Amino acid sequence: MRSTDSWPGSSWPQNYSALRARLSLVGLDSLYKEVILDHYRNPRNRAELADVHRHADGNNPLCGDKISLDLTIDGDIVAGISVQGQGCSISQASASLMSEAIKGKNLQEIARLRQLFSTMMTSDEAIVDPDRPGAVLGELEALAGVKAFPVRIKCASLPWATLDVALAGDAEPATTD
Image (cartoon, rainbow, N blue to C red; front, side, top):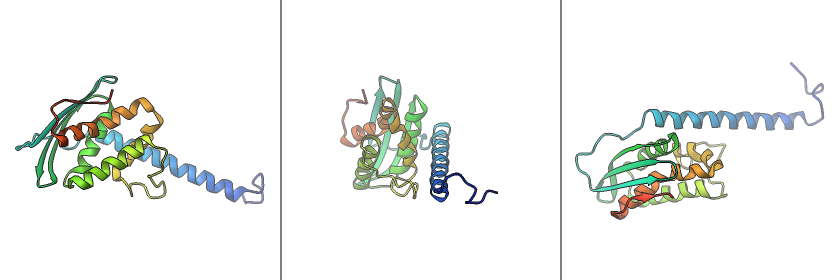
């Protein structure tokens, strides 16, 4: 093992900290990729609902993603959600992650999640704390890396646009074109 005296340059401890932080981020990126792949391969909330109070369809013509969303609402709480769809891994994982995030939440909590997710995907504002993964948006933070690929932001946002249409009771399908 090298001692700090034999390491080139006098800033070894600082370089070590930077390397350690980078390795931590690489580990976090790897974890996020695993979360996305798990939700893509094992989508949650796919079962049909007995009672459907709101329904919406969404599509992303650029990528060919499609989302169909059914909701059961009890008062102002999304008591049940069913998501069907086809498309790229980002759109389908985002739909699964969103369904887990909003189930059992009231409309005000969902609006806050929606706003935070939109900010994470479209703003330079740093809302995700790399030192506390999941502290702000839970597993939805796994999609933060999509921001580096602007065309894919529409894929990740399609489930949320479809949710907006369902909650508004609109008949027109949601689109992210």
